[in-house]
Length: 219
Image (cartoon, rainbow, N blue to C red):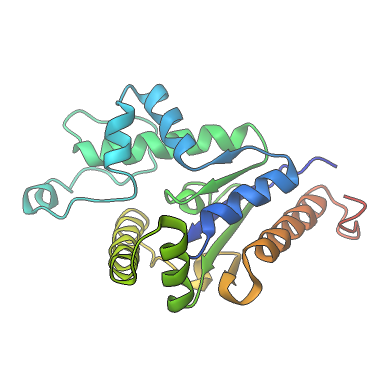
C-alpha cells in the first residue's frame, strides 16, 4: 500500500533531523523537502531563491518590524497590501507546504510545517532531539569545525528556530505535546530513528485507510 502520510520533522541543530528525514523518504519512496521547499516557494511566490535562503527559519527582532505586527496572522489565503515582508515570506512558505501536502505522502523538514498542516488527517508530526554533547560531536564531524564553533552554531541555530516557530505558531518549539512523536536520536541512532519513523508512517497510513490490523510487512 502506498504511504500517503505527510511526515513533518522539527529538529534540534546537530540531532540529525535532516538526514533522518531524507532516510525516511528513501525508505518509503516519497518526496523529501528541506531546501527544496524554499526553491519551490520561490518559484510559486515570485520571491528570489536567495531571499528565501537568507530568511530561512529566522524572524527579525527589529523594533520597527514589531510595530508592524498588527496585520492578520498567517494562515489566510492571500497577502494583504502593506503586509510586512517577513509575513509575506512566511505566507509563501505556508501556502507551498499546503500545496505539497495535497500531492500525497512526503517528508517536510522544519518551516513550521506541523503547524501549517495541523488539520491534515494524514499528518504525522515528529520532533528530533538529542543529547547536547552528541550534537556537538556530530556538528564537528559533519561540518569539519572545532568544538567552540560547533557549540556556537548549535546555540545560535536552536535559538533562531525556536524564535521563528514560537512567533509564527503561538506554540513552544520542541515541546513534546506539540507533536505526535518526539524521538531522541542520540539514544536510538540516526538510522534506527529513521526506520522507526518509517514504520510509524506505514502504520498510520494503514489506520487512515481503515485497516489498523495491517502489519508493516503487509503495508
